[in-house]
Length: 360
Image 1 (tube, rainbow, N blue to C red):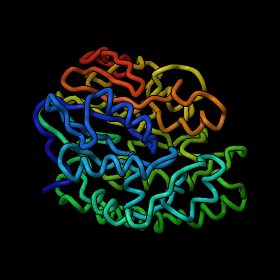
Image 2: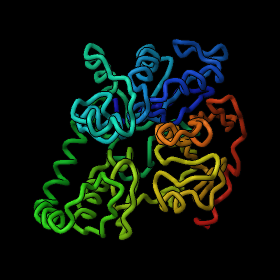
Image 3: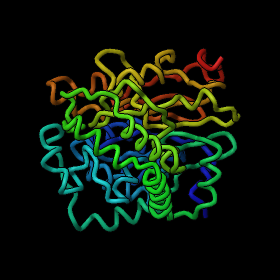
């Protein structure tokens, strides 16, 4: 069994990134017509695109709801980059619900947040370890961030359950490459010239070439990272996203996607309603600036991002805003290509099969 698994036949409901927003998940599943075990009276199946956790107030609650559905087979899921972080014990911004080392730094931004009981950790990690990187059938593909033929072919050769070990292997290769290029030494020199914490958004750093080279190598050497975090390139105008200043930017890989099968992804913090800054700076305009909020995109108009930025609700709460106003949890109903949101609103997706202007 491979890290690329088959999707079942029949109608599906593909749920976007949840990021610890358990209330939104409960509301969405209710509107979709699923019971507590993930069963549907019409025989529909849930498919999650990953990123169950981090940033939101109740990551343990989301996992407690989803894990039994996955164990029973009533729901399916692919790994997101945030699940990869858990499996690798790689504590990142917003993961204080799980990692003790992040509690102090996460509290000012994300508190209050529920913490996972120690007794639940082994079974949760064991379930996540068994998830595939991607799923497919004749008419549809699901992956967290990018469907790239070269990296998908490499993932096909890896056995199910090997995501962490394979990821670590490729990270080691990236580290070896960095060592040959003396990247760490050059990064230390850059940090002496720019001593501020790169998680502090109040200090705009200059372009740091060694930091950019390090990020880019980590992003593109590892095929599993490409599939779960996307395609990236050097960015000489640093921007703040995901809790730190970044020196590489995401690429709209769908403008090169030529296969007939539709692809549904999450990951990219799409916005249903305009207003307020994007969580990923100007690069969000590069990705979706010419694409309507309900539109399919890509060279063939058959790629759709179903992440409507529910992971940003923590910021709205911090600012005293209504967290549901700008940040949504959504599901794509397939084959209907109809969107359902956590507030019960529904809308047909648009421009399926219509080539994106940027690609054309």
